[in-house]
Length: 291
Length: 126
Image (tube, rainbow over all chains, first blue to last red; front, side, top):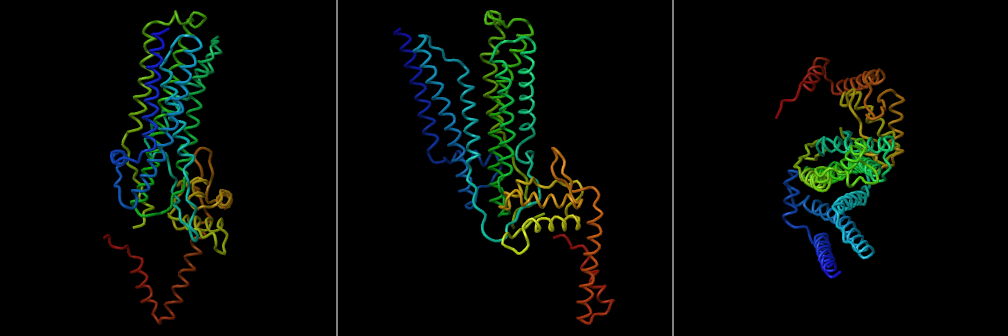
């Protein structure tokens, strides 16, 4: 029991350390490096006028994303400890990373939904008759990848029972991928339809950059989660097709597939998600600028 | 393609939107196939209720100026005979007003035509 207690304490210490770090990062003032990274990724020239708006956006989105991460991390840590105390077996699975991704995604969604809109000023108001399209703010991957992965997950979820699969996780993973896709579509529309009025060029550029980076973070995290879930569903379906899924499925999983499941899928999901989220993108749209 | 609406004005906001879009189509600023913003986008940008913008779009659709398509949204209609007629009428009105102003100034028809030609000449690029 003593060695297990030692491992448990170590895991707890690491968990508490991570939570404390995320907590500290959520509430500290926006650092110069963060502002430079934001400006660099969106090709934005930060000015005296648009700087406060950008800082506010970075602080708000970071706070909510970190809160999502914190909640998911804390819940996962508690679940690990409770299970260890009940069963006497300490199991820290890679699925914790999936829950962290989901927590981050939920936080990012809340950060966008809870953005305060300033009330319109009295008097005449102006707006462009140009429709804001996703492609103006983020590459086409942000539409295609979540749609493709969501569809793959959904097909796998629907096909599994038809092929005699009795597990709960395979349909759940497939449907989960489709749900994340649906949420991404709705939140993307919400971000695009947020008010934008004609303004000075630098303010407009900041507004465009804020939308663009939000859409990058949302779509990239959605792709990471969907990639993981869709891969699980497809691998499960493949196993079903091979007639290996049953009461002794774990013994029947080939070693290479086990490695793919345990390592390659989570690592790919996280790496792809991070790379897509940080992909540089400059919004080119100047018709609303008041010169 | 900037639209301006005064919610406190005498003309209802939906009518201000409708008339401005109609004028843009008539003037060729909005071309056939151009996509208009979603109702929610325009409503949020103008700080109006979605019903107000929806009513303006519905009236434009009834007039045959725009069409709403699933998955595409609201686009300027391919054929719009009514705007062409409207455009000719507006042009005639403007010409009448110009002729009246020229007569008041005592300009000869040749002078008026010359001034008009100069005004219509494309502006040199800066």
